[in-house]
Image (cartoon, rainbow, N blue to C red; front, side):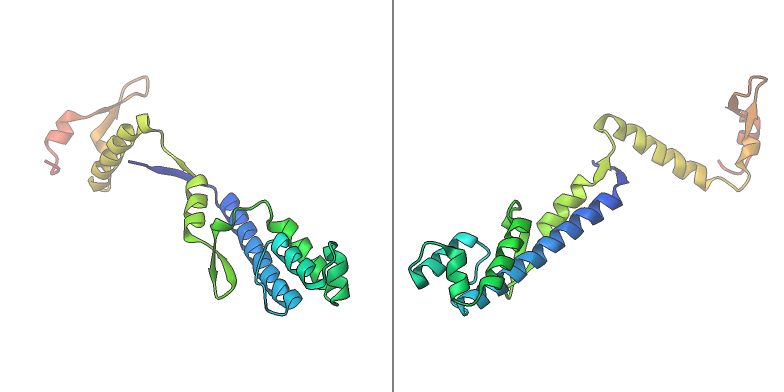
Length: 168
């Protein structure tokens, strides 16, 4: 049994925002690849785009090829976007109609990473405390009269009052 203790909301929101920005960059890269190739290639990989450009013009320099085809600005933008998403695993995203979105599996993994759970050896103590809290919450509004303190301030149950109360 996993008992969540703490959820790091700030880290979760930061990671989700980062993934959403990368998804936007991937989507924009696909749009740029369509513009550069005239709709022939839809890719987020510069190697595929470079191969297409090299085959189209016959020159080995992709940037010169893009400039010759009058899509140099788009090609540079594509390369800039690729630096944003290059280090991320593309399987973290789902593609719906050429729009990248963060997958549910990635969001679940982030949630698990941002959640701190109670250690296994403390779960039994937690269950006992939960039961104790239920019992204490079911007591009448003034249960403090059932407890007495000694001269050191230590609490103990006043058995006489408990026995004559309407609790049992």
